[in-house]
Image 1 (tube, one colour):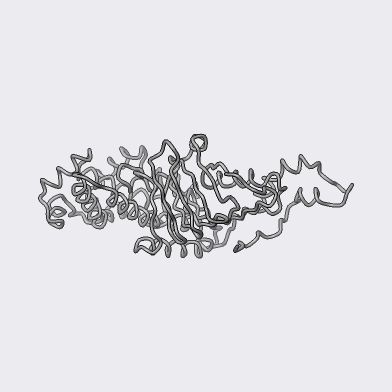
Image 2 (cartoon, rainbow, N blue to C red):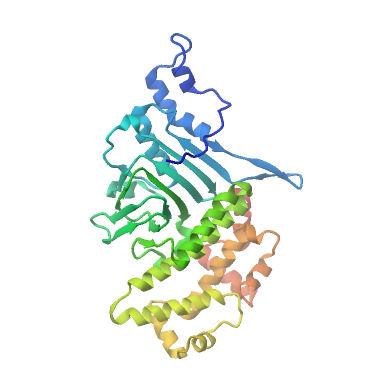
Length: 384
């Protein structure tokens, strides 16, 4: 089994060094050492790096490393589940033949609300129960890439799926889903954690219709895999703001995979309509920056009538104009608050995403997000 790079030796006092020292020399009670174990491991694991750029301090992408090796065997499984819940979601471990021999390692790049994790765990089977779902207060999407064959089944009460993953395959899910996952050997996978606010606007209905498998050898799987590999290698070298922008840009590939999965799952008389609506939305996304984007040009490009186009949106409970406006506002919001908008004025960003009236833009922006672009930009700079 491959090993991850161990964290550097701590510079602070380690309670377990005392607990394991010679008898009678500052030895901590074992129970107190167990209580301090999580705090000690996190203290060793988190690395906040700063660098200098043009005379100013710039915070780098946070690197987190975790290992159960230095923890008391009785506490390893519990503390591993706590760590996983902190960076991803709550889980319930399956039966462990030898808890004393259990070990797990993880490394992560954390930027804003995004995280890219590398996981190796002795938990060959885990469940996500209704209690686990209820304990998670933050909604997010999870894109796993398995390095070992694994079976992923939705638990009773969730949309039934039975996904068989080969090494390199992806599983896309979200916090709302309960599941039962079983790995052939120690679990080993990468996982991209995406905040709900970043991906939900790009999905039909704002959510996943169901968890799904994306074959690693498929065209989209190959692109997503290459992008994740590049992000894993380069994110630690980036400023936090740039790192968040890089991970946010992966959402585009994930949303394409979700759309393809939804289209493949359609059946019956609504299938052609769903495929046509998806094609319209793809056309809009590609031409969103074009101020001339309108129903007539879109319908002509797709070989349908403008009346058909409007009817397709009506059946989805929206309109073409409303969809275009919201997508443009979302792109403007992400650019204003993100690294790609640094040094650009709000006017430049708005016109760059197809708006031709600043009065319309400001009015729609405040109505959609509850605050002005200036307030959003100031808050994002403060958070960085």
